[in-house]
Length: 262
Image: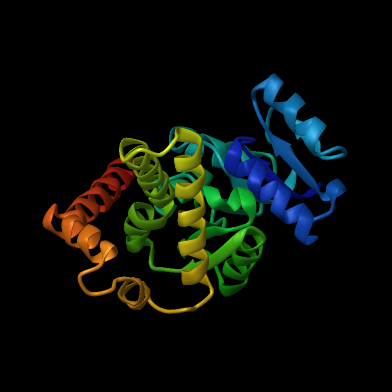
């Protein structure tokens, strides 16, 4: 029996595997990845020598379901049939009630919403306990997800909003970086230079926030001199309704997460 099985060898499954191995949470011989696509199994085999790979679930104590939402319930049922003792699901929108029904037992289920910065160890994940999950099960989930970034605990009814803010949030930042790059080109910068400056600006600003240099409001105020260039830009953002656009986008993602769960 393996200590841990990751069902789904996509980007998030790979990120978790990489983080867990790097942090020493599991040893190479203790983990197996279930991936139906043969070419993807070959890729994972080359990146993680010694890690077991399978086309279908095998016997394992703990299981992480990292499939697409549509396949999550079937993945849980197959994992339980193979001997799973508890499950952590990262499938967006799929409720613990759905997963528990698929398990057909009193199996502990923990649901979470991670995001793609987990690929570089900078993820943000929220976890919620199912009906049968204990404090020990939540601690286990925090250990798994903590290998790739920040972990917080929320009631399950807040996970859709978490999806809207941090689950989908990296795409919003990427979109802003795109727009900033393109605006620089329109203002007269060479494309490569504008891209370099836009990316580093996003990275540097995020580092200031993460370093505790101040709240977003405080940091914005510190760089916004009265009647200066930044104030002119910020005023224009506000006039165009940036806050409302962001609020509507987050709500759209939250609503879609609820739809997926239904």
